[in-house]
Image 1 (cartoon, rainbow, N blue to C red):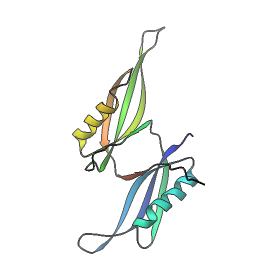
Image 2: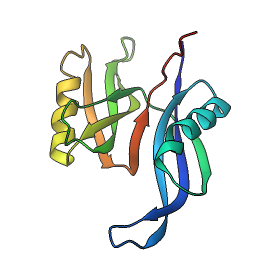
Image 3: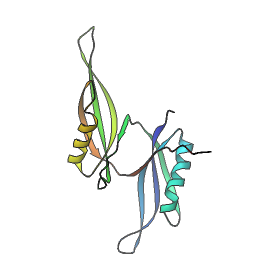
Image 4: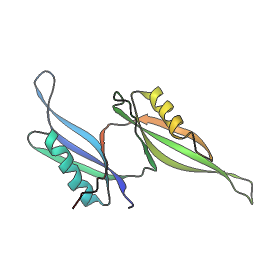
Length: 148
């Protein structure tokens, strides 16, 4: 199955620690085949956690090559890294760089770098980190095949 990642945003009234209601917009990653399925699955996933009215404000395709999750329970942030894979053109001898984006779950920036290095340890080709930045992604919803 060739699932894609979609970044979905929801806007709703969140009860803050002070007890006041505040309008917030949160982003989530949803694994799905299409925009329609992403919206349907996203609504199914978030409905139990949101009381009151909410609005799905945006859904866009997120071009990710890989998603590296952490087994650390305190890893509650998501970082997006841009990697450049380096190859040599045999005819001209020129260096060619191919960029890909990956998501890394980590506790902080240093942890994201460590997790990325560990995840890429077995990679055969040469690669470099172009950038790493923290995202506003709250959670990731993987595709789960439903049993008949």
